[in-house]
Image 1 (cartoon, rainbow, N blue to C red):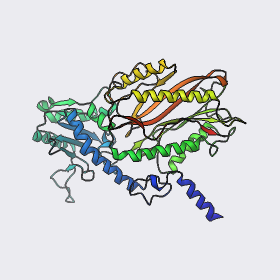
Image 2 (spheres, one colour):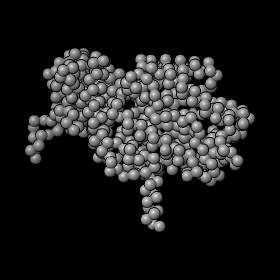
Image 3 (cartoon, helix red, strand yellow):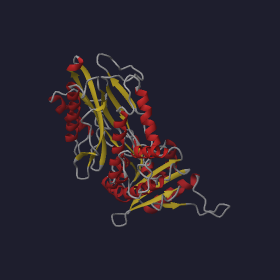
Image 4 (tube, one colour):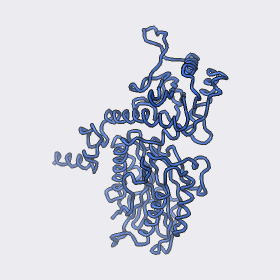
Length: 456
């Protein structure tokens, strides 16, 4: 009996993510390690980094006319682009780290220099002082000498321009701290300072674009997210009249933790109830007839997801949700169709928003669109397509064009009167990851929700 119980637990833990969904090299992964061991994950992420540095970065530097890019930071005050420039075994900058990227042309490629820190697995030329420490090892760069070396590196290469990460609009392009900038100015002097430019799109686009080898892992992440939500919005977790929304939230959070993964925000679960305003309710008990909503995301292999699904708790005698609720969900699905159809390479977020909302209104749907990029960050780099409270466009952040090879979290809501609820408006808020492919077409990373999760 004890042996059978243990076997059942192991099988249940494996869920639907079997061996076929594990990354290459993870054949020996335990059931509770859906993406393999940390070591296996690090090997995959290192390959992604190499591809991005060797293929994505050179192309972007040339597209944006950047001859040299300098990214300077100190430990615990890292530039937002840091995580996309370093190996998965590097968690923070080393003392002060200055990365220099110099474009030597298509034949020689982009030279990558680390003034401080390591070579990141051989991907950078790591420079240290010639002076030796008492134990005979070269000293690490420190203080003014590090800035002086930066100036020398720049003068030796004589770039046409020097891009730095300063921006009033994009957080991802504003990673150079005031203290580092002041010291950099002093080291470079007036002649080199005249070459300094703010190339806001370079770090923004570098973070936004993923390499195709990431796609299979990202799809597996979506599979896991859908699996967790399906279980959370079922009788395995919810007992009507007993379970609270907070119980479900913490079950989801714990499930992710048990899988050796993490979340980038606290999950949420909310309720809409016939004839009751639940807006100010705190951790209500879930009852039969309730409409459920969750907002949930995971972090794995340095990538993030963001998903919102709807559920319904069947009343006694019901076998499916009322027709009015299904129609409300269909309206939200239709709004998803409209948004995806309007997302094309080169269009700005604000252009997509305006055209999508015009089509939505023409079809009689009452909704809002607040779609965002996703990937290295949950609210990622790239164009915003609306904010929930800014449906007339987002100046600056919404003026960025859509790029092929990017992921977007299609976040929106449609509100529909439901006849079975005395025409009470019911909000269907959905969120699902989609990709603008390298070929320029939109597709769901996995699939979208088109039917309610049911608690029986």
